Structures are given as C-alpha cells and as structure tokens.
Image 1 (cartoon, helix red, strand yellow):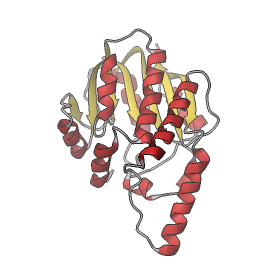
Image 2: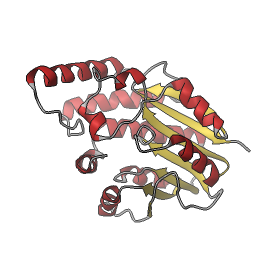
Image 3: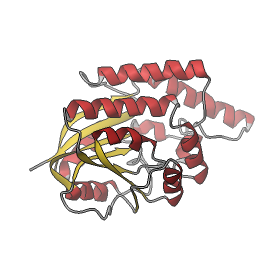
Image 4: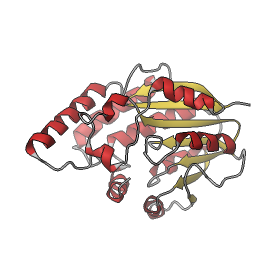
Length: 253
C-alpha cells in the first residue's frame, strides 16, 4: 500500500462508512461463533493502522501484525503497542498458541502469498481455532474498465472467487463454516461509480485520487446503515454476490 493511503486510513477508519460497516460484519460474526468467550488469544494479521484492534480487545488479548513500518507507526499513535513487524507468512508466534485470526483486506495484496499465509495460520492456531478473512471479490472488477485509483494505491493483486477461495482454504487444513459475499445492496451503485469515475478520468484527463476520504455526513450515515443491515442479515443467510467476501473457517483436528 502507498504511504499516502496509510495516512488516509488513519484519518478515516473511525467514521468512514466502509470501515464501520466491515467492522460491524466482523464483530457480529465473531460474537456469533465465539459465544461467551472473552479470553481469546487473537491475532489481527495485516492490522494496518490498528483501529480494529480496539474492538477486537473485547474478545481477549490482541496482537497486531504488519510488514509496514508506516502502518505500525500509526498504531503507536493510537497507543497500540502489542504489535509485531513481520510478514504474515511468518508471524514468529508459537505453534498452536492462537484462538482466532482476523485478516481484513489483506489477501488481495499483490505481495501476499495466500498459500503460505494459510499454512502459517494453520500452524499457529490451536485445535478448533478459527480464521475470519474479508477480501475483495468479483474478478471482473480487475478489468481496466472497472479498476480505480483505489486498486492502484492499495496494490491490489487479485480479487477472489467464492469457490476458488473456499477450496484454497480447505486445502490448507480448514473446514469452512461460513462463506458469503457482502456489500450486496451496494454492489450495483459501486460498480456504476467505478465506471463513471473511469469515464471522467479518461475523457477529461483528471488525476485519479484516493477513494478513502470523509464523505458527506448524511451520505456516510445512509451507507453505514446499509452495511449494518447486511451485518444483521449475514447472521442468518449468505448473499449470492457482492463487492467482497467474508469467510469463517475452523482448523481441522
């Protein structure tokens, strides 16, 4: 990720509709699958600037891992010190020491070897330990017609397919408990926005800028509530398509 994006994330993670919505989905699903468990050993793999760690701490002790010094410096600014500077392919943690691993917006990065990451996750998880992964979906959005500045600034290397990701996770010793697309209700507006954005940029030669910025308060509120609705529905059903995928998987015995 470009250094400029870490700054944008740091400034917007608390209130931005996307981050709030994704966080709501994450916490809702953890609460569902870890009922009455409050003393977990948790790893946030690819923690970025660290805001999610505050919320994960309600479930136990959290270790943030990131390979970017820039990201971990922002963690320090938040007062988060329990971090490790390393690639998530090699966490340096003890074997079978972790109850839960979250990896939010990491698997799509071009420099991440997802097979090595899943192998490492399996190594450090306790028996019956779980992983929760959120990652961009819909491969067709990698086409230049839909690709935006956000993809370039965040070093997007791939978008995941439902069946391929499920198979890959199961190949590395996990049983998938739940896998679903999300950003279902906003799928078509987001695709339309990408097309219009690229159209304007191409014909008017405007510079593409980061999509991580503070929205109008009213618009941000509406988008956030739509994401919160999805978080609630995801407790009961899976969505057939969406901008992203969420996977919950358990380590096999």
